[in-house]
Length: 533
Image (cartoon, rainbow, N blue to C red; front, side, top):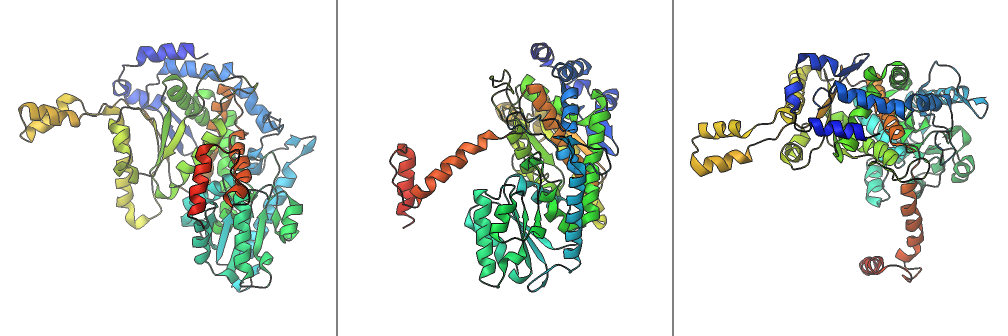
């Protein structure tokens, strides 16, 4: 199914994006939903390309797969699970049936429990040993950390609750630095682990319990668990009313919408959290109803497939021109690379096309003074995805936000236009250079241009908009996964390292020898033991 697209790509490979980017194209190669706009005019996709790409959606049954996901079918076939993160933000829709039962009442009951707990804590009715909670420490890893950490930072203008800190790394420096900033008598510790067995999370949880235990009689009273393992949370000492569970049809990297988002709710309040859910729900409705050429998640996915699977660009850069979205690239690394970083199709056969790209990025304008050099003049083409708000939250610094917008738009324009040798020579000649030195210096100032980008624009980064953005990327990953024929909702690739780490623990500690280990690993263990004596 890729051959017609690759043949078309070969035909337009030498075409300049700038040559086709006129006013009419700008209107035709945009997608809107509500007050959000996705511009993909600065790519080499034309009407014929778009038609071929949309054909992929029909050939691979994306619409049917989408309907199955929202209906609660077990589309995570390798684990035999439904995929229903969308149900967590289904605030006023109809029933969703899993194994003959409607899951919506349970979801809403949990949301109400979370809201009651958050309100009581924020208003001081739930307090620590030393009074009202002033700090919340969320201990998790992967989706139990990246999602709430990203969202809490993104919505910092809406914080009117306790300070939120996030611990994920088993490196003791992570939790030590966080706890050092907290008052133990007024700190709530949230342990986020569906199974309550995740090694990194439970190691940090025990460290936090020991830290509290040195300072108060009942440390477990200042814990909350986000887990479905009631027996394990009980054994840890956390009472049932402090446990918020979620089902196995919510994957970790898709779990921010439910109990894993408790830290966010504590920071911004239940009403703002519901606005966040409303944003996700609005994107769900758009994804299910809009025709493909006006469907924002579908078109963002098709742009990604065009660049990666057809044009062969192996990476994509996510470049939010909003410092509060500083954790979004890392969040999307997990969302996209853990979801679509696979090598076999749903039936177990080898994929016939490359799987997902490497996702990376940094907020603008910081990135401009770091890696944009490679994006503009490097030998590899890196498609870029810019995000920009029309206005910031600092009204007295409006002029500074205008400068931010100018930088964002200038970068996408520069990537497209570039600067040819004649223009570079003219500039150097104006500076007085001549002869061989003019030629040499001019070549250093050539920008190839013709480098593709998209821009996602919105009025302001508020809870509703953040919900839209996250749901947009979730559905983009889903569409790309269906077209590629893989399962976006398992993550077997993380399991082998976990197994080996568990087995290596006694060896590293010196309780077992290195027999059976490869020479490199055995040598490294010997070195580290020597310097850890």
